[in-house]
Length: 295
Image 1 (cartoon, rainbow, N blue to C red):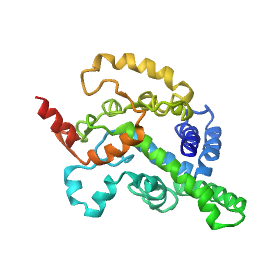
Image 2 (image 1 turned 90 degrees about the vertical axis):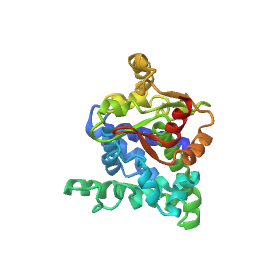
Image 3 (image 1 turned 180 degrees about the horizontal axis):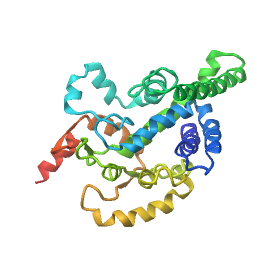
Image 4 (image 1 turned 90 degrees about the horizontal axis):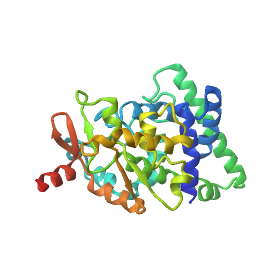
């Protein structure tokens, strides 16, 4: 439950990063740091990397949220890399430290000279956001009576649960055997956003996490405009717009996943790599093979 509640805090900071939490930039920046620093998510660096995911959703080369793996990529990997990618519980460390600290795939969010940052202003922001995280980690260390063991047990280890929940949510929002991924010549902003999936988790979890789970399609179309507290209203509106496209790859996509954890486990194993469905359009191998058998 801590993982879900901490992820709810992350969603508030996420809105601040998009500028949709408040009409005042300074309020977004302040509240974003307050929400993200305690869960060791450097606000400004994350804002920068996350913006690219939204700008290039489902773009084969430029969408870095969960990097797409082509057949060539898959077979060029070492045996360890293949097993690690398909090992479901790798999600425990994919967010922290692999993504934020080590910087795979788009650069460390804590190191000012990582490839993520290209200007002095970016590097200064990285230092400030990193310092905010360090301050929160230090306060937690003091509250744990300066015990490394207690700090890991009561602070860092619970944050790994938050990282796992975040990985599960973001993975399932954009990964499915039927979704399409586009090469540059076939990609467009609207086409890419239609490959987003709303997933209902149930048990009150969608409400706890401010509907970032079952209101994500609307968020992707209007990410700089709609705060989390209006997502469900926007979702009802977007359903009507996409309804005529329900029999195409661009229709509204939603699924009820009370078994979301097991869905994530299965998908990690089954969705191994993309192959060409048509010129410039890719789909997961299992989806293409199922469609061929159904003919």
